[in-house]
Length: 129
Image (cartoon, rainbow, N blue to C red):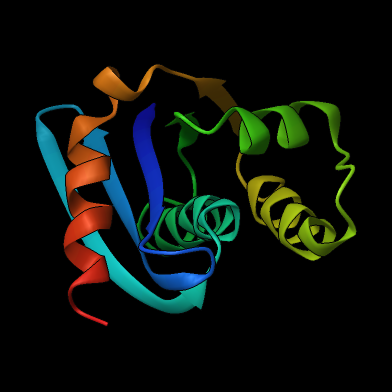
C-alpha cells in the first residue's frame, strides 16, 4: 500500500500556485514539487490530488492507494462524491475517475502538522512559477 501525501498552495486567491506530493512506498520515498500556474487554493488542493493519482497510475498502477490531505474540502468532496461549488465538479469527477483505476483508493484528512513535507513541496513549487 502506498501512502500518498498531497498539498496545494496559492500565493493569492487566485495567484501563483503549486502542488506537493510525497509518496511512501515502504522504504522508498518520492517527492514532487509542481508549479501549476494561477489558481485558487482549493483548486490547487484538488490539482495536487489529481497529479498524485496520475503519477501513481504511471508508476504503481496495481497498488492500493491511501491518500492523506489536510484539505477538508477535498476529502469531504471525495468521500461524499459531491460538491456544493459547481466550479469544483470537473476536478472532483477527474479525481474520482483516476481513483477508480486502482484496486483500492481511499483518502483521509490529516492535520497540517502531519502534512509538512507535501506542504514544503507545494510552497517550493510556487516559486518555480
